[in-house]
Amino acid sequence: MNIIKLNTVDSTNDYIKRTYKSLNNLSIVFANQQTKGKGRNNHNWESEPNKNLLCSILIKNKSIIKKGPILSLLTAVAVVKTLSRLKLTDIFIKWPNDIYIKNKKICGILLESKSFDNKIEAIIIGIGLNLNQTKFNKKYLATSYKLEAQKEINIKNVLSLLIKEFKNTVTNCSNYISFINKHNFLYSKKIIVTINNKKVMAKALDIDKTGALKVKYLNKIYKINSNEVNVIYERT
Ligand code: BTN
Image 1: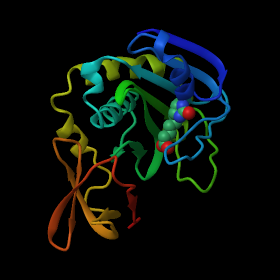
Image 2 (image 1 turned 120 degrees about the vertical axis):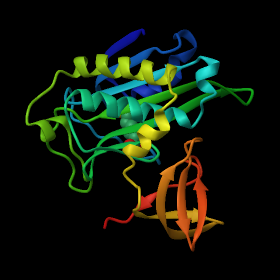
Image 3 (image 1 turned 30 degrees about the vertical axis):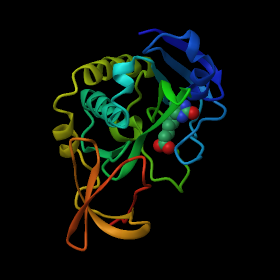
């Protein structure tokens, strides 16, 4: 995999969106600092310089692009495996693409795409993994490797591990649904979802083989696709 290491960039996702035509499939852009880091739903992704893993992976290969929405789950699996190798425990995937340690977020994943003539030409997978930062805005319930393990970690070593796990997971993704269900943060929690254009409180169940989240509402089971809704969960 071709790694482009930058000191400062607006956003590693935006860097790839501007340059993807001249980059190879599976190129990785890594930055020490982002000036306009982006999160999902138009949020900013805040990260102190040189403290966390900030990177984006470019997918141009058609057979990988076809995996579509499950790519964010596969990326989540690769992050969980990386954190397990680093000996962290209580790691969960908050469907569809956040990674939690206990009840605090340690990693966010942002998928974007570039299309031409209505065909997706490239998918950009942005990963923000909190490693050595210890102070976070109080409005977010966030954690980091250092807060959990009480020691610092080399960011580039974590990048190498993550790349290895990502390649393994994407090329050999047979058992990933059972893996995700073992780490399903939302399981049995009450969550707010949109069913028939109405926001309702439902009970989250497992994730099915297409990557959709099953929920129970008024004794019926519904499937929620990650591109359809914003899941908000009620802390119990
Ligand atoms: C989220 O949880 O809202 C997703 C956060 C994704 C953040 C990463 S950091 C590297 C890449 N570049 C960005 O601008 N965003 C993603």
